[in-house]
Amino acid sequence: MKLEWADQHICDLETAVSVFINTHPCELSFERDLQSGDIAIVIGRCKLIPDNLCLLTADILNALRSALDYLARQLVIANHQLPSRKCGFPIFIDFELFKSMSGRMIQDMSLSAQTNIKALQPFNPGLGENRLLWALHELNNADKHHFPLAMSGRVRPSGFAAKMAEVGSKVLIRAYAEDAVIEIKEGAKLDLGISTDHGVHVDAEVTVSITLPKIGNSADRELISTLRGMCGMTKGIISLFLDEFK
Image 1 (spheres, rainbow, N blue to C red):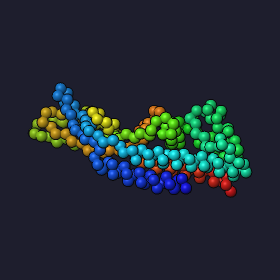
Image 2: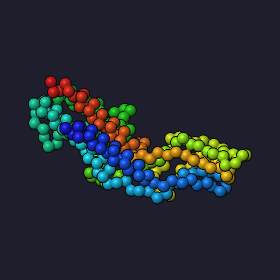
Image 3: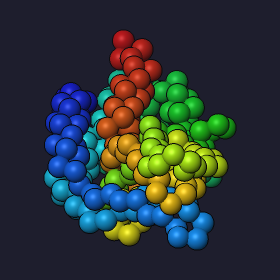
Image 4: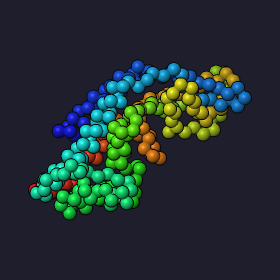
């Protein structure tokens, strides 16, 4: 039920995000350095991201995390035990914390279920902070215990085009990074890596996206695609334990 709810509300959130972005939430302009000729995008007045987007995101994260705790309880019942108040699905990035704290959460499950849960932990090699499971855990905890869930807009320059205003004008493209991003906040600047003569008109296409807060040193995560990834991940985790219920 929680996964079905999350699926539906991710669709609702995607619609709400599109509506917000279509309001053109920020003003953009180009600024030319008079000495170097370097061109930068400058963010002007910005709209605040609506509270309903943050609240719905928090609810989706909570539903996905709760689905894993519900799985943990069902694994205990499938092992002919009664779930305790400590029963839950552990998620740890630190192996020592997992050893000291996970026992009470999974001790009444079958050994095979405990082994599978350990194999999914973010402390395993190659996982860590970039693991979606850890991101789900941290974002859900942050919303409940530390600070309100916040999202930030990003603008990505794309499809750069420079138009010469007069014959003989030069456009020198030094190094344009297509994946450059800029936080949408008033006064923020992004150097396009382009230097021009006077009289050259510069234009660039931009796309606005909404991202989740960073977890540790992880890269920015686009909101909707990340939530869909988390939902798919949760379904995949649940499917790993189907044999426990036969």
